[in-house]
Image (tube, rainbow, N blue to C red; front, side, top):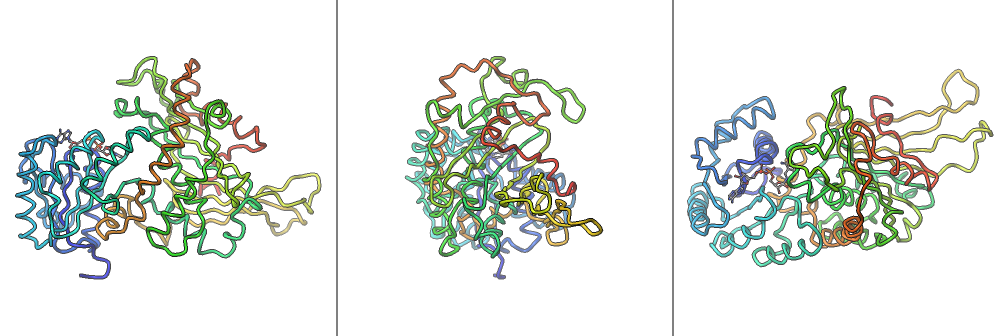
Length: 499
Ligand code: NAD
C-alpha cells in the first residue's frame, strides 16, 4: 500500500441512483482512483429501488463522471469495481441478497471484511437501514465497519436524539461519520492552520483585538426541486444548525493540545457549550428571518418563494437567517459573531470577515477614521485569504491608503483543490473522523437552534416575503448589525478580483 493509499474496503452506497451519488460521490471516487488514493483492491455496491443491472449502473457512473469532470481516462477499469443490487430499504430479503453479494466481493477482492455503508438517502430511512444492517448480518464482519450519514441529522434535538439512539444500537460513536460537507472544504480546513500556524494571528485572536466576526453564506439559487424538504426545514435548520455553527466553532475554539480527532472535537464542543442561549423575547433581538419575494437574478425575473413549485402559498418558512451569536467565555466575551445565510441573494459566496478593533487614533489625518484591518477568508467559490491593511502609497505625502494582501488558493498553489466530498470520502476510508461531526456537537447545536425555532413557530409571521430576490436580505438584517455600531461588509467588494 502506498503511503497515501486508503484502506481496502467495500463501499455500499444506499441511494445509488440519487442526485448526491451522481453529482458528488462518483466523481469524487473517480478523482481518488485517478490520484492513486483508492486501494488497488476496492469494490462498490450501489443500491436503490430501480431494477438496474451491474452494466446499467456502470454506464450511469461513467456518465456522471464524464458530465462532472469532462474526462474519463481509465473509466472502464474504474467502473469494473462497481456492482448494483436493487433494494428496498424496509425489506429483509433485500439485505440478505446484499449480504451475499458483499461476501462474494469481499473474497473476490480480498477486502478483509472492511465495510463502509454510505447512506445517501432521505433521512427518514437512516434508522431503518442501520437496524437492518445489524439485524440482517451485514455488520458481522471481521474488518472495520463505518456508517456515513448525510445531513440532516434530525429535525430538532428530540428527533436527533432518537435517531442517534437508533443507529447507536448498530454502530459505536467512533464508527459513525456524520457528514457536514463544509468541513471538507479546503478553506474551512484552513481556518485552523491560519490560526494556529501563524505567530501574528493567534495573539490577536481574542476580544482585546477583534471587534466582530461576520460569516456570510449566500446563494443565488432559489429552492429549486427541494421544496418538499425545505418547507419543513428552512434556512435555520438547513444551514445554521450545521454549517454556520461549525464555522463559528472552528473560528472560536482554543488551540487543541494535539491535532487528534478527539482533541479537536473536544475544543469545538467547548465552543458549543459556551454559546449564549437565545430564547423567548431575546430571539427577535438576536435573530432575523426572511423569505424572498419576486425579484431579479442575472437580469431574469424570478418568482417569490411562495410561488415556487411544491411551496405552500402561505408558507412561513424562512429562506434567510441573520443572527448575532455570542460566545460567553474569556476569549470571546463581548465579540459578536454575526452570521447570515439565505437563498436568492445577490451573489453565491461564503466568506468570513474578521474585523480588528480600530487603533486608538489616526496620526495621519486626525479628522478621518482609518479603515479597520480585516482578515477575509474566502471559502467559496473563490478560495483564499485577503488581509486589509493601511499603508502609504509611493509619491504621496504621509497619506494612508487601504491596501490588500491576497492569497488565492485557486492560483499557483491550489490548482485542482479537491472537492469536499473527495476529502471526506478519503478521510473515512482512512478512519479519520476529525472532519465529521461528533454527536455532542450535533446535540448542542440543535439545543441552540431549537430555542429560536420554537419562538418562530409560535409567532404568526405576516411580513413575508420581506426581501426581494437578488438582494442581501431584509433591512432588519442590516439593523441587527447597525444597532451595535457595525455594518455588514459588502461581500462582493471583498472578492479577490476586486482587491
Ligand atoms: P434523491 O432523492 O436524489 O435520491 C434518493 C435515492 O434513494 C435514490 O437512489 C432512490 O432510488 C433511493 N430510495 C428512495 N427510497 C428508497 C427505498 N424505499 N428503498 C431503496 N432505495 C430508495 O436524494 P439526494 O438528493 O441524492 O439526497 C440523498 C441524501 O443526501 C439526503 O439525506 C439529502 O439531504 C442529502 N444531501 C444531498 C445533497 C445533494 O446535493 N443532493 C447535498 C447535501 C445532502
